[in-house]
Picture 1 (cartoon, rainbow, N blue to C red):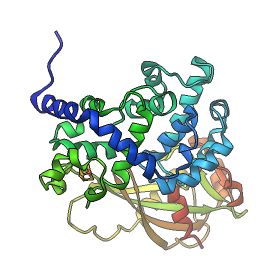
Picture 2 (cartoon, rainbow, N blue to C red):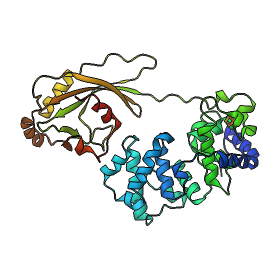
Picture 3 (cartoon, protein in one colour):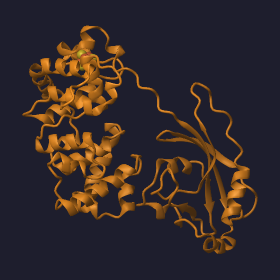
Picture 4 (spheres, helix red, strand yellow):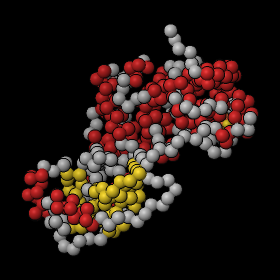
Length: 382
Ligand code: SF4
């Protein structure tokens, strides 16, 4: 027997159903007039839509635009992406962050090439089996590229729905259930435009703070607006727990002026990085200021000992300190730069079975994937 939805969800679905017929025409009319001119709206090719949707995850539209054009120039179709060199791929993603997105995009392209002859599958279940494609991305691609009626529910849409129907947690965090609500509003004849219009409304009108209700095309249907409670919705989410991580980043230079890079640093395992040593990790305490950075000297010395490396001269000072966040980890990195005696070290490599590593000068790193963390660290290199 089919379970009936819980009361809050059932009421919300009913409310959505009751405004469904008038909602979408108003929204679509507004979208036709006000949609921003964005490069991924030029056509509805599924590959182009897919790339844009992945790039836009956790990244602002303005940041994505220049990357999107260059990425498509380098990887114009699924086959080119599937067979691309990984470092070339990551170099075109450098600066966008969340590199697993790029690697999943390539895995997805490889999957589509072998399983679907290089054509993005139109079927929802098959689309969901493409690596890196979840409920949101599949709904966006299938509705925009193929006109399939699947509602999208992203952060912008959740905000709009929360205000339209005064939705309370935990429903606001249950994307699968919110799809049932969004589905009541969806225009079945133009689902791609409707979905884009909902996201556009959230991005440009139904803003997180101070929504522009006076120019909103759906204000007549909005419960938060009619009850003057727009500032109460969406209800705030509990903050994710973060960790303060103290690190030392080492610019180690050999006699040829090249610097040591390694692959496999746990936080960015697929990028060439200078060695980074963790000095300490503690749960962030909200409200209190972070204390003084610890002296990295002892940890660096013992790391050098384990690696069989020796300074070529004096023990160097810290040249600078900077901060960088990776997901929930808030790093504070102290930069140390030094010349290394690689004659003694060469023997050590074979003995210790070194991780994948290489010496690069700055020119040799062009074309390789790079993190903005390394770009920040370069400012403190002499
Ligand atoms: Fe958002 Fe205001 Fe429009 Fe309601 S009326 S959907 S709160 S912009």
